[in-house]
Length: 276
Image (cartoon, rainbow, N blue to C red; front, side, top):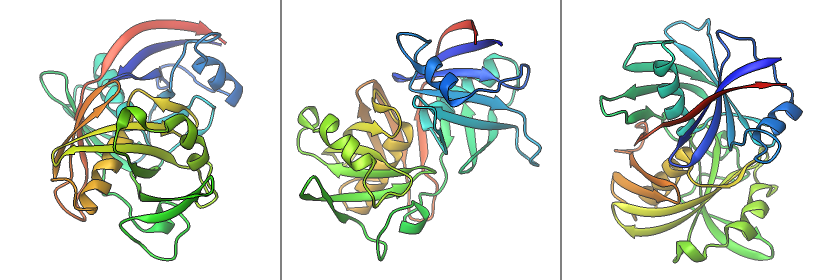
């Protein structure tokens, strides 16, 4: 099976993107892992499939696989790359694209400068919707990790996120705590883990340990989740600049019940083909 692909990134969070409309793409878990491997494959944090859809008023279907082969519900940086990809490949000439994902429908808008705005939908805060085991919804939750009790904000942006406040982002114990929290039993579908330093009411620094991928240079849904948690905890305003290791995103959340909007770049790195 010979497949054409595009390598892309959203501020360092990198992807292999396949057009599954004009070529047949059927990948096993082992093949996804091979493609994602940075020594024996192409290398990526996530693999993205662009598919046709029969759903009314929807332009495409968007599927996401982590480097460990697991399929996940949502990826914000991937969504921006998806928008750039379908326009660059001539699959659509629309400025605003409606896309079906495993977690619902999202809307992507590409401006003249190439920046992509993503309507990420309304954040889910009810524990059962995240999913997260808790008796009632709260702004923060005490979670025991490695015999220590820590306070987290928990939210779903179509995928589950736990957000931990830290005082110094460079010293955050991402590699130590990330895997422990990712697989914590209170998160039945595992969880992405954000380590957030509040710099000002309109600026945070963030590192994210993504489930199934480890720490990445950027995480769009993680940036959205961190801003939602910071606003709910009274630390942030409604428009926030998020600095991640790979670059910056702008995140807006005007009020409860409103969708979160993410604005940032998407970059095409190279085109290729691979024989599987």
